[in-house]
Image 1 (cartoon, protein in one colour):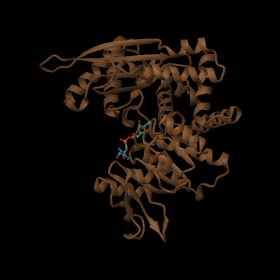
Image 2 (cartoon, protein in one colour):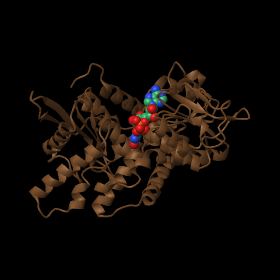
Image 3 (tube, protein in one colour):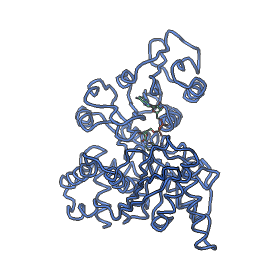
Image 4 (tube, protein in one colour):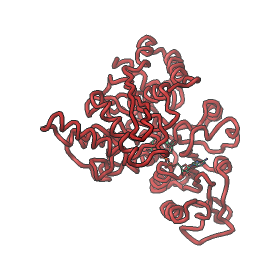
Amino acid sequence: MSSEFSLFEKTKKDILDTGKRHGLDLKKLEKFISPNRVVEVELPLGNKNKQIIKGVRVQHNNDRGPYKGGIRFHQNVSLDEVMALSLWMSIKTAIVDIPFGGAKGGVAVDPKLLSEHELEALSREYVRKLFEVIGPDKDIPAPDVNTNPKIIDWMADEYVKTGIKKNPSANINFLYASFTGKSPSKFGLEGRQEATGFGGSVVLDALLKKLGINPLTQTVAVQGFGNVGYYFSYFASKLGLKIVSVSDSKGAIIKKENGALSPLDIPLVMKCKKEKGVLAGCYCVGGVCDLSGGKLLSNEELLALPVDILVPAALEDAINEGNMKNIKAKIIVEMANGPVTPVAYDYLTKKGVTIIPDVLANAGGVSASYIEWKQNIEGKKNAKNETLEKLEKIMRKAFTNVYKTSQRLNVSLKEAAFVSALKKLTESA
Ligand code: NAD
């Protein structure tokens, strides 16, 4: 697990530079940046070759509460990357002000090459090896790249079984709080699926209110129509925003009426995508099928559409030096992780574009994790509407704090989010 380019060193430099610009205590900041603990494990794969898979859990900081962060399964997982992502989690939990710290886990394996039986055995072994350092009041893992509720259910089950073996009178609900992102039928959270997209629509609504903009007047293009892009589009259209274009990896769709971009019916577009497998052709649903108005565009054309709001919800670096000059939107909501490169960020911010940064825009996922953990600890169960109500409160409060800081310091929302989180973290150290 090694890499030549150090993502951790780059993240460290960015944080120290932010600290210098805002007069933060650099000694405390240096201390905060180093992870508290790195636990490396060896996981024998139950195949004939007796292959050993490397796993790691980086527990970055727990000054504000138990460590929290996902586990990724990927052949390129490196210690450097997991360390950087764990640091990122400490900052993200502070931005949304939930009582967690930061952590991240990784297993260096391509899960697509494993049988289901091997994948389950590997997931359970990872938990057995880490049992003593994780748990509801120590470190609470969640899904990340290539891990899903099914894998998390195996892991939570292994944690509960081991916990009961060690202490037969242990509280089962409490033990299930060891992992978040479980299936709703297995102590998971109703509304988790919707959480990230919903959270993004809440912070966008809050920004529009601050700017005095009526959502009904706003057109929106969304790149990526997966879990995040779909639910963002669904909840934003419920607020009255006009989602005029959405895309998947094969391209984008628009619908025009009388020459003007017209709103897509989001649930119908999803129904169509599910039936066809791709979005192409789905502009015909949700009204009169206007073949001369409906059109398939490329993803680059979507980014350049004359819309008010652009929502990259697919890949990192989608908006970059090569296409930043084509952007016409005045607001960008970073629903994907890192969809606007640093150069494009500077260019667009200077041009007056307001960007809601990923650390805030997509923090609905980790905030829902907090709701799931709490319901397990308290032995309760939230209905979907209760989850969304709680989530809305967390996201609005986080937005207000970041917005006020950006006004006070006269900096971008991104810089404000980092400064306020780093202040909290160095003050609690
Ligand atoms: P997903 O796999 O469900 O959806 C991804 C979508 O992007 C798909 O519609 C896919 O077709 C589309 N896509 C892929 N390549 C594309 C391209 N070149 N151009 C346009 N579209 C393309 O993934 P997701 O869970 O919706 O995650 C999307 C982003 O949000 C990722 O950056 C992820 O890290 C981030 N994120 C997700 C969550 C979450 O809770 N799911 C939380 C925080 C951040």
